[in-house]
Amino acid sequence: MSQNVLTRAYRSDIFYSFSHSPTAIISAIVALIIILGAVLAPWIAPHDPFNLATIDLLDANMPPAWSPDGDPRFLLGTDDQGRDLLSTIMYGSRISLLVGFASVLFSLVIGVSLGLISGYAGGRTDSIIMRIADVQLSFPAILIALLIDGIARGLLPRDLHDSLALYVLVFAIGISGWVQYARTVRGATMVERNKEYVQAARLIGMRPFTILRRHILPNVMGPVLVIATIHLAIAIITEATLSFLGVGIPPTSPSLGTLIRIGNSYLFSGEWWISIFPGIALVLLALSVNLLGDWLRDALNPKLR
Image (cartoon, rainbow, N blue to C red; front, side):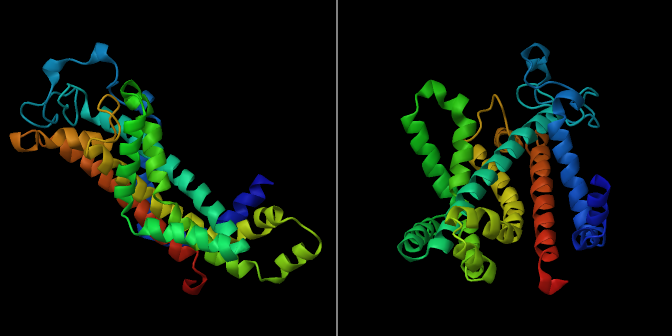
């Protein structure tokens, strides 16, 4: 059974398109290296940046190992707290990827659900959901995320800010990105609901929820996967932006955006590596995911086959 699945996957148009696209292959390799480095950080990172027993402030702001004043123990140098920058980037990528995947999943669930309801029900329900979406589109996603983060910080006790920062960030980024999913799924649902197989399901008395789940949802997931792939890069950059502005992940558990913000304070004093290397990791991650999203969009477009 598994061999048949692998054979069909190998002979599929998607695999053929991927194997004949150097850009997609290189992007997948870069993204895979970064993701594996983040996931396996506790086992392959040279140092543990969160173990206070192994951190020495005398090692702070050390340049990369190839510099005249560098230390071979720290390949990319250290930050302002004496933490190994390579290890901190690997652990920081874990947080950036976690926020990115969680917020995309949150947006996808909300957007697809509202899009299915809006496209299938129509009428007043459709008008209300789409007017809410239009209002949200009037504001930049980063502004909505900042607003939600500010409200959460005002309502939550101060001693819970750091412990709940990750959840607030996921909610803020997720709630600001559901509109694209909803509008795309709504349009596809409005087309699918008038087809014969949906009409037949209605005639035999199948409930609307069952029709949406079994018949319409599988047929509208193609565009959703493309949006989710591109949205992942946007979510990672949004998290980095919020952390750079000081309203994201606390410095004790830094993401890539937090590392860039910390390094920005030392950029003009000569410690360029604290900001540059996390910035390069962020650019490579976002760019590789974006390129994969562009390839997937073209691969799933029947007009380009």
